Image (cartoon, rainbow, N blue to C red; front, side, top):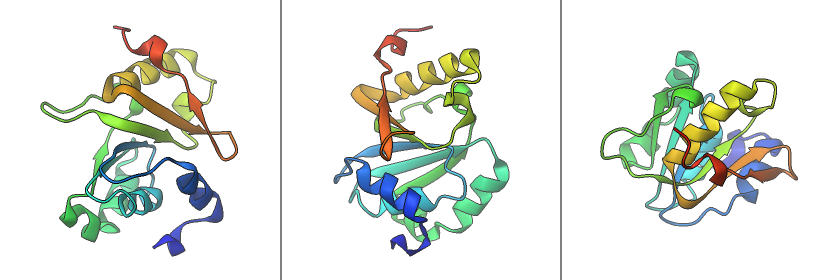
Length: 148
């Protein structure tokens, strides 16, 4: 299954605490390779991949027919700083963001908005993982949970 993942992405997916039943939000999913890998590791869980690029989402959907049909994976065009759960949509256990410009520290206002949206989409105790660790690190989001 991981044959299509780069060694770097495989290291990142391997570092996540994936288990059966998790709901995962992948921010900046690109063509969906990591999302497919995670979907294959969480049993009856679900991965939602979001990306601001319609082209990336189109590629992700076309490469993920089996996982989408099985109900373990879905994709949505969305900017993280504008992301909202859909009515009735369950919150996520973890979020993962790799090379996401809105979270790289260069745009503090966008980053604050993005972290607020992520915090609202995660369950209490949910964790945001970003790149830049070995190979990932967590980003504290509790201070954003009650932001407007």
